[in-house]
Image 1 (cartoon, one colour):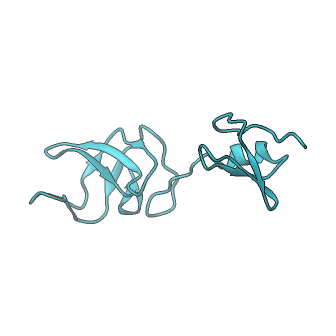
Image 2 (image 1 turned 90 degrees about the horizontal axis):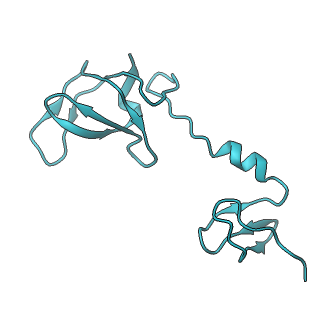
Amino acid sequence: MSELPPCPKCASTFTYEDGGQLVCPECAHEWTPGASDASDASDDRVIKDAHGTVLADGDSVTVIKDLKVKGSSLVVKVGTRVKNIRLVDGDHDIDCRIDGIGAMKLKSEFVKKA
């Protein structure tokens, strides 16, 4: 029986082969054998604003559309400047604090880099 390499994400030794890919049953990571270096480079996320400018942690952005705050009667108005953003994974990919409203998560498609 051949030895399969451990998972590059969680180092699990319980990997198995599925077609042309290797699969980890513990973390559900899939990769092509021999291409682990390429998959690590593709894990770097690139988040862009509404105009296609790449965003980074600590950037300042401006809201380009009125946004209703869910569960509240507050509205984040067009032109609101948000400083020191933090990029996160998920549907809402910007974590920030807006003066007068508090901590919020925003979608990058509704902001532009300031």
